[in-house]
Length: 305
Image (cartoon, rainbow, N blue to C red; front, side, top):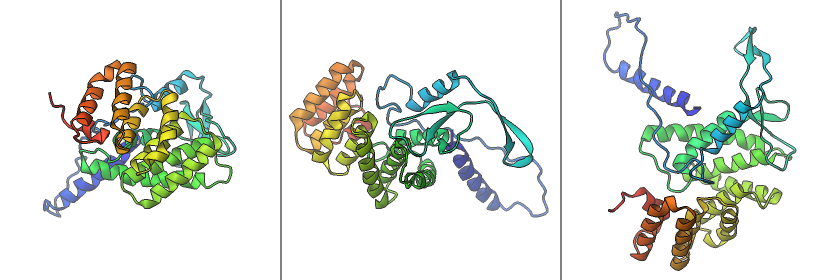
């Protein structure tokens, strides 16, 4: 995963600091390699596939499609050593950077002109999404959050540069938009809110019916205080079959003080997704007793049984 090198760097820095403070004699030479165990990432809070909780993450589904496609091996010069060659034999996720108004994922070993290998970016955005798709973000490890924040700034800046092109592709805009929403949720600065609104307007100008764009724009508007403005986008996501849009809709109704509509939405959710009955019932009970009204806070709290 793309975040792991970042975590390694954090751990290595911490380890070196610790070694410096232990008072190792200067004349002592220790040639033993430094060995440490890299911690696993903590579990995501949100389902990694908001379209359907029973399916693997969208990123993993794309990787499976890439692996299933024929591989056209390619020999290239090793960027670290011009005298060596590398054989590329694994399909990556490639999207156009310009001149395309629709989603246009393809699978190849190397990106061509006006294309980008989006594999690592998609991998990373998915991991951040699992912690910070909604506000406030959910982290149990402080260092992990710092790592995500640092890497997200880099990824967002890279996507911003690509999105500045006058003929930027739909694929780049969607990712620049998501990165900006995640940056806002991680409290990285008001500029991320401004960017997310700009990208959303560009996206919906190109394609008003895109399910993912409507879902993300709907909940980001709602969680930013624009509940009335969010409603039509959330409704489109619901009609497009985005599972998590039911929870977003209920949360939006709660913020609008429309508790009956919120409860009905959750009842509909339970009918369509019976495996989510326990979650829906907890939320309905919380609404009816006039307790905490934020859906994501209720889900994050321990179950009272």
